[in-house]
Image 1 (cartoon, helix red, strand yellow):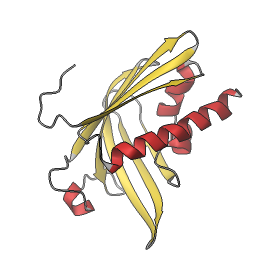
Image 2 (image 1 turned 120 degrees about the vertical axis):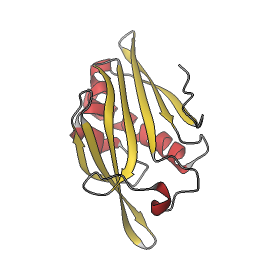
Image 3 (image 1 turned 180 degrees about the vertical axis):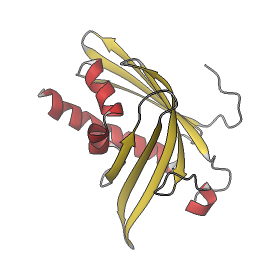
Image 4 (image 1 turned 180 degrees about the horizontal axis):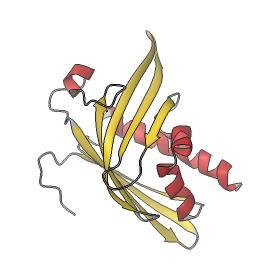
Length: 166
């Protein structure tokens, strides 16, 4: 699939988990599970509201400790595709606590950072294990956001292991 709507920046990460597809699906769609693993090391997710259906919205708050104290960031988006245990696609924008989109430049992001990005999650059962391919369209592969995903997926692997008892 090709995205010709502007920026071709994207992060694509493939991971395999020793867990069934339905468990990995829950990690992305159940607010309690999502809050347990999302974000880089040290981040907490005090709010995760998810109406997982096409046209449904999401609102997530991430809190990280900085040398100047805690910093809270909000993200909102809309679900574009929901194919249970197979594919999840949603938009993501920085927002305020009410879900109103905020300009990336107002949040200190570099010039040219898109207001809205898209996250695509594809899941495939491979002999009882799950192959997950996550593509975040609109962020450069060398960005802090890309590094954050890699750290988040390490947390996801640990959370999946704890949930599956393996």
